[in-house]
Amino acid sequence: MAEAGNWCLIESDPGVFTELISGMGVNGVQVEELWSLDSESMEKLQPVYGLIFLFKVQQGAPAAPTPDDAPRAMDGGSDHVFFAQQVIHNACATQAILSILMNRPDIDLGHELTNFKEFTADFSPDMKGLAISNSDLIRSVHNSFARSDPFVNEMNDPNAGKDEDLFHFIAYLPIHGALYELDGLSHGPVNLGPCDDDHWTDKANEAIQQRMARYSAAELHFSLMALTRDRLDTYQEQLEEIDAMLLSLPEDADERKQFSHQRMQVEHELHIEQEKRERWHRENTLRKHNFIPMIYQLLRSLSKRNQLEPLITEAIEKGKKRPSNS
Image 1 (cartoon, rainbow, N blue to C red):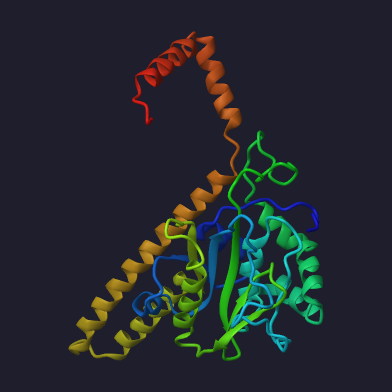
Image 2: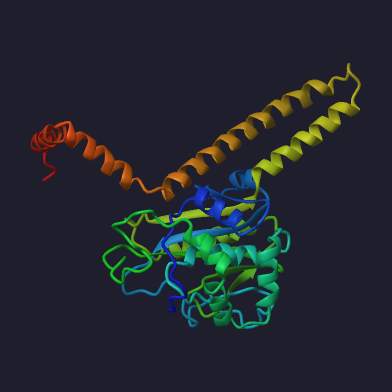
């Protein structure tokens, strides 16, 4: 794989992915972590633009299916699908997100990604991957989530990740009446069969369960997220619709009580979502912040006041008294 300016590892987190999408100029999209694909859970999140599945790559096994895997056949007639092969390390999360964004005409991509999509429309999958790797916008937004750690350089350390578990992201979404699996390490998009836009997540659930079945029962390193419409926009629209209904009703109408109750529920959901966004923003700020200078100054101050050595001795004694797990 090419280095293409170096890309960092980023954390698999809905707050990270939501801010990453916004940073690329996309409007009205957020990411939600999923614990189930049952109909009730998915109904609450509609519209769902696509799913991102995270799994641990088994040692000695390919992360992607081979062209001979049946019935998971590569779709040779998929010119209508934006598919980019992954040609750089550490970019599979961003690439899975882009696979969904670029294949949903109902998403406002913003000026930069719209131009990028048009510019690469006739490119081959490997050339699309190279174009992603050389996009200053996509790379800079991705790398803005690099850990601010002077002892770890994820982008330049050739030994980084050698002794760690390897994880991979792939995307599932409906395109022109068919469910597709888009995996940047694969040879092409995988057509999983016909589906409709209302119940495509049921078929995606089957495909994900089949992939999970390849692992042992003890393997729990899976994660599933959904790209959905921004819940803040959804709740604001619902409030506007309810307010319009209330204005159209006479003051003594029996329906006013019902609509007023609905408005209170939506306001509550909106407040919860706003608090979640504030928490996400704070967590992302902390992820990017370098705490080493603060820690250094704290230790230096304790040392000057002769308080550091007693604290170290106390910590050592506590460690000796701690019961062993062996």
